[in-house]
Image (cartoon, rainbow, N blue to C red; front, side):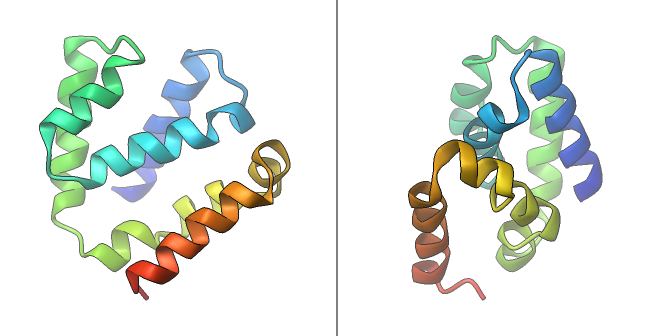
Amino acid sequence: MKGTLLLLALLVIGELGFQTTEACLSFIRSYGALLTSSRTFLHADVSQFYATVAERVAFEKLQDCLGEEGPKTKILNPQILSLYLSPECKKYYGDDIIKKVQDFLNQSNIH
């Protein structure tokens, strides 16, 4: 299921015409909205991409599936880590943003 989530997100990013590096932050923000149990946060996030009703329903289903996972699995997912810790994202956004994400994870004591 996690692979499906990543694939769906990458397809959405591709359809929106973003460069992969430009989409790193958008993807992380959308993934964060999926991790919450709040439909309000999720809808607010996907509305910036002008999501259709069917796309909103698909994201709600993804949110439900992710809700069944533990916090460690959700946040320290290797596919997700490899995306926002990738050299391309670091180069585009700079090490400062990546360091903030890493510091947040360390402060959250998720490991």
